[in-house]
Length: 310
Length: 114
Image (spheres, each protein chain N blue to C red):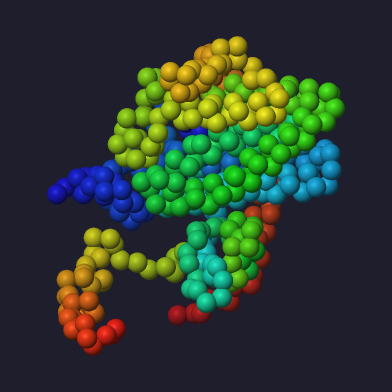
């Protein structure tokens, strides 16, 4: 058996590929790209939420939001650590992000305009993330799959706190409920966009499915998300902003309208509402932290025992 | 697909990574957590830190935010030594010496549990 056949046999047997195993370059590169993008998304994803930490309406909500933002940092770090098992350096991934060569999920290029956005992000954005990440716990690459197990547990907190926040808002005054509806109106379509292009347009799907990096197609995941979310919106008494949304008895699924693909590609290409601001902020934070990183190294060197002369 | 950004028409998806670091980053550490008394430390992941004390502090922020354990080890990644997967049979005895297994010995039922 050739190394390639042996590799595929491990995958076909539902076994995991581990860092020191032989793997095709394309498998390695696909994973580096995907895991790095995932890590960058977690890190950039802190920005829209940190926007509201200082303005949370109560100490309780502030504590929850800080814990959530800290989780996002943690998720980014587990994922960078998974990417590093494939032979890339974390600093290099940072540089690629800062130079705009590496991307992150477009969802974080939308602004958080009112407090209900925080609840809606938890409910929809983290809900969409869970739909995808549960699938990734079965991914063929061991370190990525293991990272996903940890992340999914924590995402559950993210989604539930968001939905609960919205329940409270929707049980409040008319004005509070209007905030929740406004947030849903703005986040619904970008959330559906998170699942990516239609399967017919998705260039990498077939190979990624054969390698079991990806296990369910974009459109199937999107359908799963819509089916799960519509009753949750009903419970809140909110209106999903899609006139074509309706239950299809025959299919046993909800039918829904078409995504605005022009907007989708605009944001992917860097012209969304917040693309430039997000990266500029990330680069500033990195540059402003340079002295801390250097000082920590200097301190460690000072503490290290002097090397023995040989 | 969530968090995977598609390649836009006219863009290249190929990004060269070199495994070269330019920033002189912090060294890597492997983190092991003992979930509770009575069980071994188990590898949970890795992180970067300038020294052991900071590695322990970072491990709390990265890996043990929800009571995941009662004890943490951090070990410089450069100190972990391993054999190549292809050499596994040189190091780990394959289960072909069946006489090493208790279940290959037949004990009459009347002897009872053994």
